[in-house]
Length: 82
Image (cartoon, rainbow, N blue to C red):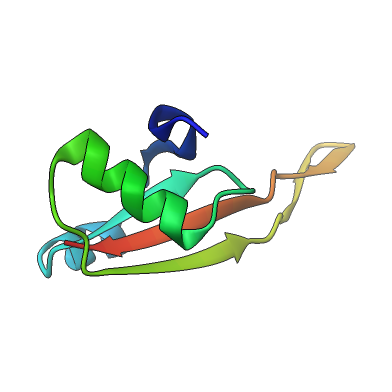
C-alpha cells in the first residue's frame, strides 16, 4: 500500500494538540493498515524516526437530524510518537 494511502489526514482536536506537545501526533489511517505500514508511511512522508505507534478503532455514533436518523462512519486512528 502506498504511504499516501495509509495516512488519510491528521486529526485536529484539543486532545491531539496536547499530545503534540509531547511529540505524539494523531492521524486518521486506512482501516486495513497495520502498525508497521503506519510506521513506514510516517517515516517516508515526514522524514522522521518513529518511536512508537498506537492504533485504535473509533466506533460509529448514532446521529439524528429531525426524523432522519443514521450513524457516523467507523474509522481507524493512529497515535505516532516521534
